[in-house]
Amino acid sequence: MIEGILISTLVKGGVYALLALGFSLIFGVARMLNLAHTAFYMLAAYGVYTFAKLLGLSPIVSIILSLVITTLIGLVTYKLLIDRIREHHVTVLLITLALAMVFQESMLLAFGGHYLSAPSFVAGYYEVIGVKVSYQHLLTFGTVLVVLVGVWVLLAKTKLGIAIRATAQDTEIANLMGIDVSRILLIVMGIATGLAAVAGVVVAPTLILEPHMWMPPFVMIMAIIVLGGLGSIKGSVIGAFILALVEVLVVFLLPAGAFLKGAFALLVMVIVLVVRPEGLFGVSFEEERL
Image 1 (cartoon, rainbow, N blue to C red):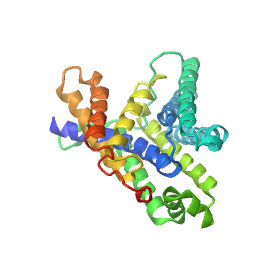
Image 2 (cartoon, rainbow, N blue to C red; image 1 turned 90 degrees about the vertical axis):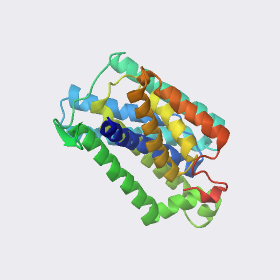
Image 3 (cartoon, one colour; image 1 turned 120 degrees about the vertical axis):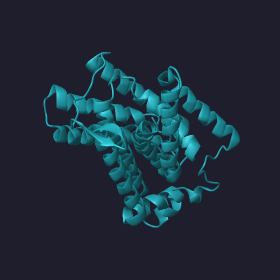
Image 4 (spheres, one colour; image 1 turned 45 degrees about the vertical axis):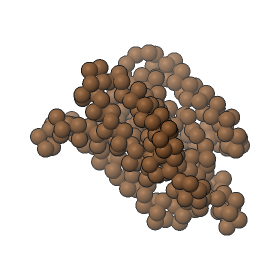
């Protein structure tokens, strides 16, 4: 049982970490709360289903097409709808929420209210510390690990990463230093949407696809961001695994736990807001972000 809890926590925590990392990245750099973030996760999952199952394309082609198209949708919607009004935070909240609902209703019109499943990329299982783990879950965790390391290298070791961190600290000073802030914000939006798309692609074969599937992870991501500290990259990743453990324990140990996991996530969020509003790795000053 303990082994099963550990493995489930690693897989779920990895997916949540991707989603939370993208959400934190957008907020940390653009100071923008993107309520449509997990809707891109949904679009990517439906994309895999469409290309792999309906059109019969190979898994690799289906994954690439889904990632590219979802990221492009994120970039286009940001440029057309959000870029000009990103300083108006309430307006951004309303637009991104409306965008999420548009994506949801579009999937409902295209696929109906049916529960769908994407084909598995790899079949079979491997025994890890006495627990049978499907190759699909191992692929999911491996992909998440590679992507998280890749994002860390990008932010910490590259010129683009330095520009992103400089923009996060102070957009005006970054602009004076010759950094194209608008370009950086567009790139960050692309990275964040791409992270959500990767999360949607890798979990698509393990989930039931339906138009409201973006809502449960959205609740969890909000709780993770509050727990880790709004805008904190490190806090987002660590908070993701902490809340994944809480979710797995609730499902494993409580009767009807699957129906209570969202409530427990919100409970954690409320407790953190009351006891430590800045979160585990929150910052006191804007320049400490990222």
